[in-house]
Length: 428
Image 1: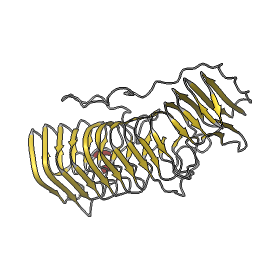
Image 2: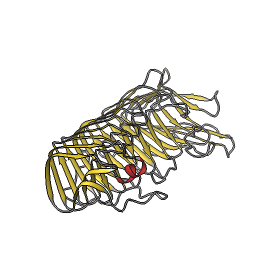
Image 3: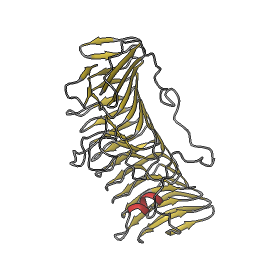
């Protein structure tokens, strides 16, 4: 049995259990059942360099292109999914340049109010409603945009100064799929039922949002949502609130960048990311309040994981947060399991729950959701703090690896706990 705790520090100040690094600090925490026990490495012998800071750390968030076509979606399309529909039912189907305003109502089963297949649709000062008791939602809605109020599968749709309300299963507000591109600004979006995200991409779609007010009520209805086949989302400003169980403010299976937005989940984790994808938050206020659920073996605020459901390609998930705030109403803060992951925090003000179980947990899992086989579903995690104040325990286990970097004036106060041995801990 191998247990290894390696510390490589440029400057170390240890006071009352607090680790403060004025320059560079690295803590590499690893365990491996297959090898014999190894001694602690003396400080200063490793000398490895921490990973790069968040993209845009000192720069502005990415801008939307000036009419350019989106590139290939990161992450690729997963296998095993059902086929896209051969046709969509819609009140208005757009195949050439057009402008729309006023009221648009949809009441059909699994119907779109507006479906853009080609051309450029300019929707402004509109009131778009979608209501149906018979809509099915489910995979067709989540993967392909069936039943969304506004759907772009090709061409471009621009929605501005409008109101979108849906009351149908699978009734997303604005959905971009495949070659579709959506620009949404100064608009209020209110989906009320399950599987109804506010703004949504899948299958390689591209969506740009500015100054939206999005409020969702149903289960599996993230205000900012992505699904199978990935895509690109850039969000600038606005307030995004998810009120349903299993509905984080942001659900990531795409390449997502968010700037200066308020992101709230009142009945779920704040942010959930799966697989080979990236999320970047710049000066955002992110909050979550996840309930303790019997099918889980712990409760978290931000999770990076791999479910093997086919919703995302297997690979490293990257979470970056620069500036802004993170607030947790319940449970631990950062949790990663059954995947490779990288976290980079820079100057984020963090408020943990009063009963927070950990700051960071990089372990396998034994929950009832089926995230890998218990005993071989560990995490491979790199976590970097840049000018970051951090408080709480760091947990890992014998089937996981953790590289922890505390840099550029960061502080970490807590304990490092190797959970495979309850009596084994290192104080930071």
